[in-house]
Image 1: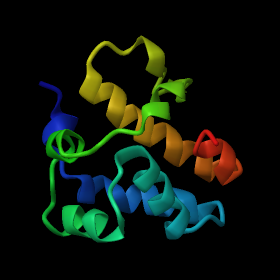
Image 2 (image 1 turned 135 degrees about the vertical axis):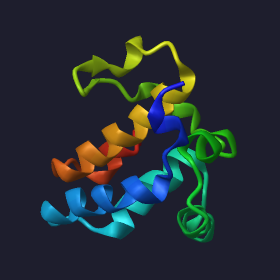
Image 3 (image 1 turned 180 degrees about the horizontal axis):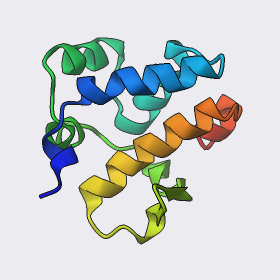
Length: 113
């Protein structure tokens, strides 16, 4: 089991916020992407952060967007579409969405609209 699975989403969330805000994007855009990917609304996102839910539990309880499989590319030198572990793939989906927001990609493209 990879260490990230038992890491709390809240402990990584601060890095996500810093990354998007550094590039003049907003927390609202970050939450829009999280909602799109997981189906969680604002209250559920806040609950998971407050309860320090692990990535494993966070994604087990999520209803993944059917279009999430359209998220492709490389994260940390690994192609997302080549990951065989479903949980690692889901975590990397979230990482990729954060990267795309930080790179200034329009939200319509980030959310595969």
